[in-house]
Amino acid sequence: MSRLGKIPVVIPSGVEVTFQGGILTVKGQKVTLARPMKNDVNILIENGTITLSPGDTPAAKALWGTYAAHTRNMIKGVTEGFTKILEIEGVGYRAAVEGNTIVLNVGFSHQVKLEIPEGLSAEVVKSVITLTGADRDALGQFAANVRKVKKPEPYKGKGIRYQGEYIIRKQGKKAV
Image (tube, rainbow, N blue to C red; front, side, top):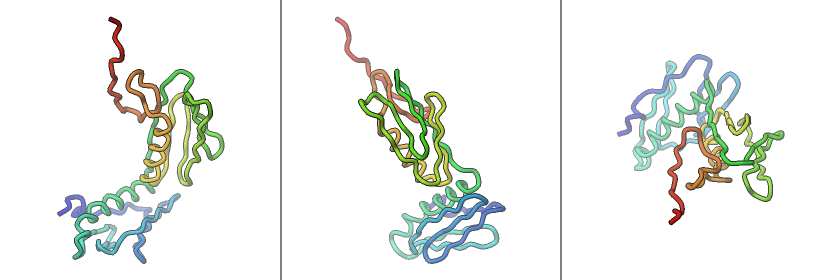
């Protein structure tokens, strides 16, 4: 039994939630998010709450808590939004936003250009990249793609990392 799935999801004022044709749609004041959901989990929307219950299939119990978490994330996304902060560490390492792309200079012989997905926004201040958006999945995936360009290395810690991420350092060579 899913502990998260048992808890009904409260719909805040100003948010409209519909479930038709296997697609859950959450509409806020500025953003609309939609996610396909399998029929294994029963979704009931009434009196300002969303109640999820598992069906009879074996996959239903596995998807029950997952769909509850997705629903909560969609509602939080259209009301508050999500933010991921990445830090760039290294001499000469920098980033810039040019239109709909983020340009990274992280020690390669060339610039790395990543297109910012629709619905997300990026802002660079000195060596800090702030990514914001309503879709938590898309935001997390894009942040992981940016970090993957130059992962922090264990000797000096140079690279791109999440804010607050701790890099375990190695000692390196010792002079005898």
